[in-house]
Image (cartoon, rainbow, N blue to C red; front, side, top):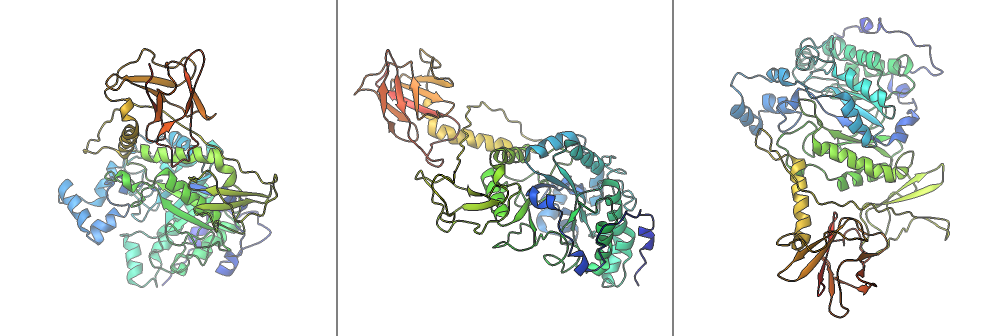
Length: 554
């Protein structure tokens, strides 16, 4: 039989009332307009953190894959690294969060350009990141960090001012005896939601007042088992966040893309064309896990180019992007995640006008030019054409806009970052080279593959840097009597002055390493002006520094 839930709501305050009262049925609940801020935000950060961050192996579903499905990699991992009597619960004291600094996290999260943050307060393992009254000795206050991690994140994020707070909560728990008993009864009893799930949901709303409530994990139970419409009616009518809160569609078996707030579909959901209902693409930078993995290779992390492309496509089709990171058990955001977040923020700092506060346009992508997506800003009647790949022929065709010459402007901003780094790396205690170090090493190797001739087996020249052109350094190779001029910044005016070499017309040759010979003209009293080619992003030999090889000069 079903238990009454009156004891759950009896302690809740009554709101002052709104113009519209929502009834506890889907027709009424689904009629609530989505708060405007959410559609304007476009981009949020998801954070998966919990006891699963301790083994940090395979997936945040570690407990299920090890204990229930007994998948071979997980079983072997435990057999090889832990004693036979080790239980999943024994990981909890190791979830220490000793390096966790909510303010530092917030600085990194805000740098991404995201407008909201969603923290997993409880995943399917049932461990709560706050001192839940209904999760005795299986929460972050009683065991592990012995801190209210939710409160620390919420407080720091709110203090930032530019970020809104979102909380994720799993309806079901894999191994909770109450849930298992209800499942055995084919959900004709509701001990688990009445005594566990619903009290936790009310507590989260009243204590932390999130503006996103991200529900997940229906456990194959219908929404009537979870009393979803009853809870949502209270949330929209009487809760302290009734005017601003947004929710998703994961409120019971069959509710996805049917009922609730914004639609999420399956993870990494992107519809083929715009849909009338607001939707969100929740995805993760690590393509194989939402939680942190110690053994993740660099190839499993999406590049910033891939992430920007996903953001652009998502927004063009009318969705929001919720991009996930997985912190470590000791409370750090790994450098590879931090770099991706800051890179996204750098891109949005330049191109955010084409993302925030935009809507879908009549065309989403171009019918002639591939990898080109449109967004639209009604306020300024502006159409944005976002190129995911830079054209190689020096121009781009926009076949969709109807334009008047001189009326439509396309602004292209190019940022060239350069440098030459000498890097030290420190492997981890378990014998890995962290992905962020691997990426730096491979990047340096790519640069040296093009420009190594200007580095290896060279000596100092009579001039080390140029007296006219800043950030230009010389090396010399006696064997071939070659002078190398290395530019740390790509000139913006189409040419570069080398004031130091003594050149002879018809005898001196200038080559851009990785490309071909270049034209040049002599300067008086000495030196030369090298005419640089107009190269597309994909034609340029490398991205950080460029070497000119001079032969027949002194």
